[in-house]
Length: 426
Image 1: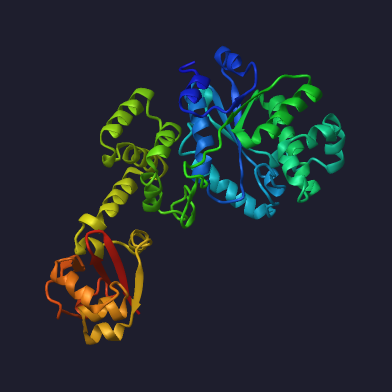
Image 2 (image 1 turned 180 degrees about the horizontal axis):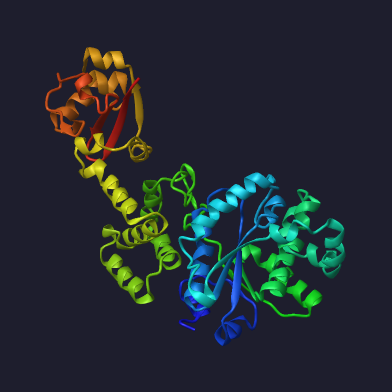
């Protein structure tokens, strides 16, 4: 083996639970292991990156990774970690989602490297011809209701009600493990810590139905230091597909990680070695303002998920508000422009007012409430604290007209050094 997979997970803070005997098995032979992915979207999100990185470390340690996309289980719904039942998907939607996720997984795992090349499997392939009567006869009889009721994923939902569909989910996932163990020689299932109960049901089914032995590893669920959910931004989920989350927003998500969170993220989501991370941490501790860890994290993961070109464009865009010229802003494409100014306060101004010309103080007080009074606006202008389109306003009698519009639509106002406002002519 190239490296110890379990030791790699440990120092990166990626090991939560491990079944006895698992580490010995991994140190003894090349093992085929799998992780399941939820197909309810046509893109994986940054929350899935924990499991993608787990498979990547697994492969780099010399083992064979398998990604299971749940074409069948996506029609059922996993209750683990959820407070309500999710919507079920039709076959056409599932197939579209599976194909899209497959392309994303191929960016990270090596599917053409010999014995430990990665593979993708779809559990719909073995469930589509499996009748309900066959399933309860051949699978259901091996796992008692008492055993299933004892799982946290079930107990936590009983008070508010749970459908038989979701109750049976652990049997379906357990059969996945049994099928892959019997037909593909897969001995290990991995997943998030909320999956431990479902995974163990699989090892139990293998023991009872197949008189065999299988193993399990789970990773911690990632939470932000402030208690908010990892994987979401102010505008919602952060996706790996840049049509859902632009490369700029993706880059900003990682760049804005807190100093506490980034020390966890850089271990989990990058391939930097331990010594490299510790050196960067020491540098960060000396000068936190340089944000060495955040910049290294954002560069590494944006480049791997998107491209080096997307990373460079995101860095350039990130500096435009503070360092760019008005020409730089005008040259942005519409998507990048909207991304950059998404969090900037915005006001709508009548296009006719701009075309007729409007005094700058009137613009900043009556048309847009950037200043609470004309007197304060005038005082700020006289003190050199107001800019329009990156140009310092020195004259309180300045008239702003259509020639000031960026791309015939926008005016960028600035109060002080860091307060920006976008005025849209409508």
